Structure formats: structure tokens, C-alpha cells
Length: 406
Image 1: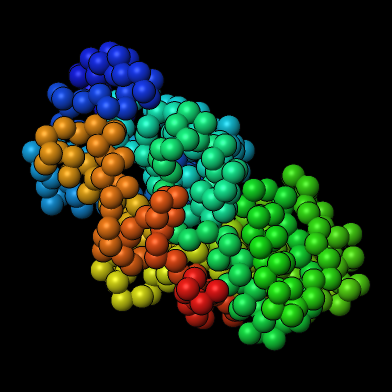
Image 2: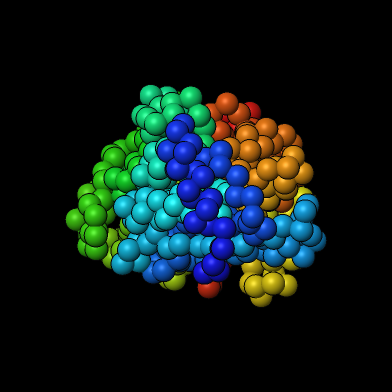
């Protein structure tokens, strides 16, 4: 971590700012390097999501520094891991945001990856006036309704949390629509009982029923559960056309799919959301990953607007982008543009950066034009649908669903 000679002075100035308590509104006048914080799961099973997502931010920062920024300022990327024992952890995420909030050189944050981590972080960024943009959080309650308002207790009317992906109201509905198009009429639902997983499963269930489908059952996994034989035997007895899983790989998504073979459900299709869109799912499920389907709450990286990004990413990291690498790259560039605009105006502060993010309008990016509505949600809602097939199993893009059609 780099040192900043002006940091102590900046914090003293910020202490006098009453509204946001810490550093919002206090210019870091002597600093010429500003940080973009990143909070993601970077270890264990969740690292298969976190690392490629973080790479998107790394690439954006490196490109900006190489191109040059107004006033000769430079940017620094700092990532903190919110995984504990290999699984994303809300308490760890909250502590990471507190660390960023206490560092006056951090102008905004990209992350987190998981919705329950965001629930723990939003009150902290709201209190500090620190903007954060998630590339992948999809739970509706982070931005919509009374639950979202409760996350903004310090400054209820100030939106500091944004996301460049769409939310589960649309992802679940798109999954249900795609399942119907595949000809599935009877589905058994299982979720991991977490904020993201249960929320997505609930939306899928409502949309599937509304479309004329039958939900044969809806059960929840328990934390750290490893043996799903009894649950899958129960599900098999109902003779479903497919199993829908709401959750992520690290909370059981891969293992549940793998054990379907032992329960006599080897040929039963498996559908999930973006929580099983990672390499770890392929690794854990093995050959049983074949005949799985999943949605991603963002445009496919094969779209025309993403080709330059894909080429640059593969040249830099010698690997294909992850499901949310392009979204993280877009989020980082929104922040970079906000910092550059503040610099041109003569004062880079968190308040100025936040205001510039709020005012982002149709900014070009690999995931399409970026802008935010009054709640901080993207106005460019697109869901991508994939099938995993073959030996070894690989993901294949099938279709795109615009939220305007749902």
C-alpha cells in the first residue's frame, strides 16, 4: 500500500465536516494520486468470481493512467478480500468499507459481488458519503422499497450505492421466461436461504407460476450443508422437468448439482442465476454441469460493444473475462470519469465524485451505455441466458432478454 504525505492533514480537515462525519466534502488538496477501492471475494471458492471481476477494475485503472488524467493526477487500485474461509462474508465486507472510508485518498469503491455483503456495506458508505458501484449485486431490496431506505439511515435522501447490472425482479422473470421457452412445465425450487439466493428464487417462482407453470416444491439449504441426498430424493419423487437453484456455487450450487446423479436425477436439467456462472461451478459439478442453464444480469461479453474490452482483457490477463469483468470495468470507468470531471472543476472530493457519478448519462461501456435512475439502478437492463453442455462442459450463450419485454 502506498503512503500519502497529505493523508493526515486531509483527515483533520475532514473531521470538521459535520454532515458526513468523516471525510465527505473535504478536499485532499495535496494529493495527486487517488484510490479506487475494490471489495470482492478474492479467496476460496468465491475467488473464481472475485479475481476476474477485480481484473476488470485493474484494466480500467491501468488504461486511464497510461492515457493520462487531467492535472497530472494518477489513480491507484486497492482491493480487499471479503471472503472468510472461502465464502463471501458480510461482516468482512463491512469492515473493508470502513477501512476505505477512513482512507481520505479513496474516492469511491467498486463492489461488492454478493448482495448480502452489500446489505452490510451500504449503511457504511451512506454514512461516509462514499460512492460505491457494484458490478453484480442483483437483490431488489438493495435499492427498492422500505428495505432499501432502512440501509440509508444516516442520509436517507442520499444515494451512494449504484449498480451497472440489473436486479433480480428482472433476472428471475427472465429465468422463468426462458424455462418456459425450453418447455419446462413443472419445476422444483431450491435456494441457499441467503439474501441473493432466496430473493432470486422467490421472483422466479412467482414469474413461473404467473406464466402458467407449476412449482412442485420450494426448499432451502442450510448453511454449510454438504449432503443433499434426502432433499433431492424428495424433489425426485415429484417428477420435475427441471430443478431451479437460487444461490451461488460457494453455498451449495455446485455440490447440489453433482449429487443429483446419486439421487437418480442425472438427466434432469438444472437452472440457476448468475450465482453459478463461475468456473468453480464447472469444477465442483464436474460432468454433471452438463445440461445446466443460468442467467447473467448483464449483456453477454460477445456483444459488439465489448470486443475491444475482450481483446484488451485477454492480452493483459491471458484468460477469458469472467461473467462480470466487463461490468466491473464499466463501473471503474464511471468512477474514473467522475474523478477526472472533479479534477477539471478544481477540487476532487468524495462529494464531487458522488455527484458526478449520479449525473452519469449514457456513458459508453462494454456493457452498453451507463446511466443510473433515481434509485441508483442501471437504466440499461439486459439479461443474458446460457447453457452449459459438452465434455468437458462449457458455457454457451443462448439469448438476450431486455427488461422492457418482461
